[in-house]
Length: 291
Image (tube, rainbow, N blue to C red):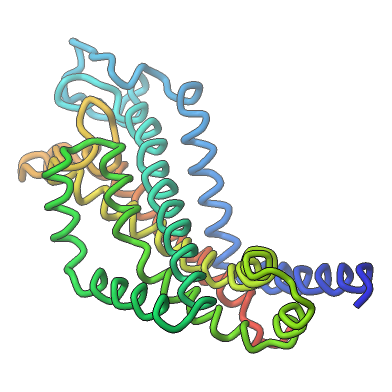
């Protein structure tokens, strides 16, 4: 096929994907909300009215006011500033963990699907073994061994979240290997690594991209859970999860809602927006749907 014809077909395909995505209202809404959260995280040093670690000795546990729009915590730190800076940490955990998931899952799944036979059997049995363990329990054990902290949380979530992506891309590899363009490339003597990285992985990647969006939301929730339990990101570094630790007290739940409602809303907004985005991408990339 001439190169210019192939390029026109590729542009037509991605144009169809874009039109499908834009018709998915929840997905577009999720994308806008996610971009706003990312902007808030990047611009946190400029948007924050106060230093997130600075304590106001005259406003311990103060309710929302013109001076502190979302109030202060029990030691006088501005809640709005801490929530904005926490966005950077929580989103970084989600993106960092999913990046590791995708890299490991794509490499192992691609090798398993393309090589087949014994290599496929060994990789998939190891993947099945990883899937058989209760994930939260393993995460708690590993974090307790390595110690709490941002880097360790990202590392643990990244090393334990790849099996589903591995199985997904292996299935795509097995399907794509039977396609005519792969048969033609093999007949022409194209080297195996070139077929794998130039033709197979790019064509198998759209479903992985959808899975990665849902994995990002899951990583944010797990990080929030670990931080809430005191095993994730450690104070004074703010994350959405450890901002909720003050809500463990019944007195705080009833009398100081400004301590737990803002980080809770940020978590809900982030997870919902990422899930809406993933739903829209899944529908847009589904070849069975008509334009």
